[in-house]
Image 1 (cartoon, rainbow, N blue to C red):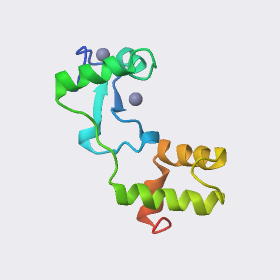
Image 2 (cartoon, rainbow, N blue to C red):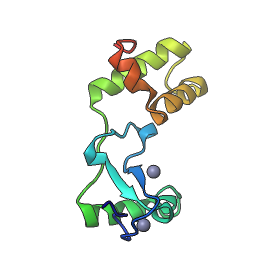
Image 3 (cartoon, helix red, strand yellow):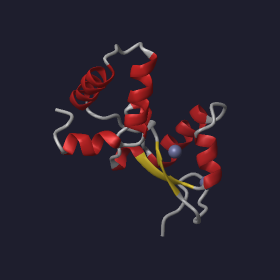
Length: 115
Ligand SMILES: [Zn+2]
Ligand SMILES: [Zn+2]
């Protein structure tokens, strides 16, 4: 039975990325933990984010994990090509956030669209 890693509540659990997907957090076991809706809300609130990260580390030993550098570079190249913009452009950042946050890059990597 899964439980919230912070408070132990065992219903309506959500799988949380310790390092956000839009910050290139991976979807591996090292970056994922179960949280209840309440703790999850706090984990995403700017006010408690850091505190919760510390608590996650103390309770689970997990610091989160980012994707490997080569994959990050490949995604950035793809976004550059798709948007015709550079990294500090609004269009680049919007597209990049959508792609990483939805996990949409996984399918594109698998199909060789991002190479
Ligand atoms: Zn909880
Ligand atoms: Zn989350």
